[in-house]
Image 1 (cartoon, rainbow, N blue to C red):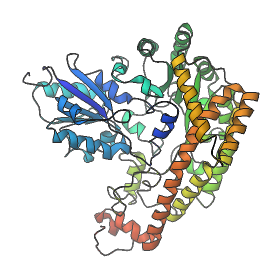
Image 2: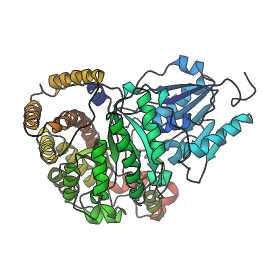
Image 3: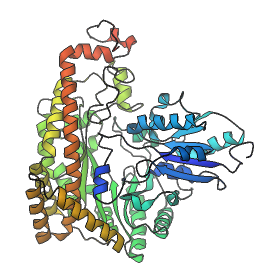
Amino acid sequence: MATNLLDGPTKCLILRPEFLENTFYNLTDVFRTLGGASPAPPLGALVAAAYLPAHWTLRFIDADVEPLTDDDFAWADIVMISGIGPQLKTILKAVARAKAHGKPVVVGGAAPTLQPDKFVDQVDFLVQGEAENAIPMLLADLGRGAKSGFYHSTEPADITDGPIPRYDLAKLDRYMFVGLGYNRGCPFACEFCAQIEIFGRKPRTKSAAQVVRELQCLFDLGYRGMIDFGYDNLIGNPRKTEEVLTATAEWTKAHGYPFCFTTEASMNLARQPRILELMRENDFRYVFLGIESAEEDVLRKTQKGQNTQLPVEEVIQTLNSYGLVANTGLILGFDGEGPTTAERMLEMVQRTGAFPTLVLALHALPNTGLAKRLKSEGRLFADGIDIRRDDRTDTATTGLNFITSRPRVEILKDLAHVLESLYTPKNHYARVALTVSQLRRRNKFRPPPRMAMRLLRSFLKISMTIGMDRETGPHFWRALAWSLATNPAGAEVVLGQAVFNWNYAKQARTYVRALREEISRVEDIGEASYNARCMPKDSRSKVNLFPMATSESD
């Protein structure tokens, strides 16, 4: 072995830890039903891998897809771990395993970028921000024989001049879709958003030629299916998006439409008819919209005024008319909410037909505008909420890490009510019926024989579970029959959303139980005392809180 890892025949283990149960981010049951093992390979890890030396031997393990064994750690000379905030515990668990094998550990991704303090004493090398800038600095240190280091470039990465992500390292046939990072950065300033803290507010895009090369790479690797296109807001730079989608439309047509697409965009996408037409030509089928709240005053207070420019109903109808199904996120706990917030949210969802895929309590993520504002107002809790159980992993009850503007119990009760209502068969299939009635889709991607057999097996699983359920079954079969009779392209929506709703309903039940426990805990000690326990000790005298005697919970 050479004297340093950079020059030697280094064996590098790249891994993504698993997602914990009881979180909207864990969709294992969904994807197993649909024939996969995980949503998508971690794009950030594959991008980072592309910047590692060509003479290194790389092994990529996604613990969501395959087991991570002691033999994997024993094989490696260095371990690189990538993950996001909801994986914090499993990241640290993987770090501990690597250290137990005596391996140097590098950690990167959104989790250490936003919360470096969680890792500085645990890992050897900490990478913050974008791989294009940080990985070369890490490699330079490894070449000098460094045993530790911290790497964070404050400059936005130039993504117009870089290698193709190492898609070849991932077992692409085990995933439901694959990410293609066309752009980074969003021009809007939603104060709770962590993405703009990582990638900035100035949109950066790859060239049309780069995007086509990545599509060609996936095509040559034999991948066929769905691609999540974008990364941040698809229309951060509408002119560039139109240029790129024009090129991809030509490529996909010439290659027989080997892919269909999903993406994420702001609601002003509905005002971009040319881009919407290009999305239809490329066979885009789903778009995630961060609707968040049904109340305009709330949206303005959190600096999400772009959501107030068009009625949500008009936005969803427009997207449906171009063949796009709208998924959305909903959040409770914003400043400015009131007694009618939950009912207005439920009414908006049913009226529009949007499908809620993330329903959360507001969380002030580290370094976001929200966290900075709350801290300046003396409302941000200390790091972690020490009166909660350490085993809490669900994303519905780990938010509200601040003194709320309306009673905490009221917010928690509203969230429980929303979760109990959204995923009932009656409400879900009413949204399905509305969406299918508005959907004008021309599917161009046709699954190859192997995928078609997988989809057939999935349909049989759905039929034997959801279709045979006493409560859900009648709604499901009616919706499927009606779609096949009136809008056959909508049958995919009926089937896919049935599986997602089945999973979300199950998750919601566990969330509601946890919320009820949380409500009891707050009511038992009183909200002022609850807040006092959670605030930084040096801040308690600055806010109007009732002091509490020191206890083991402090």
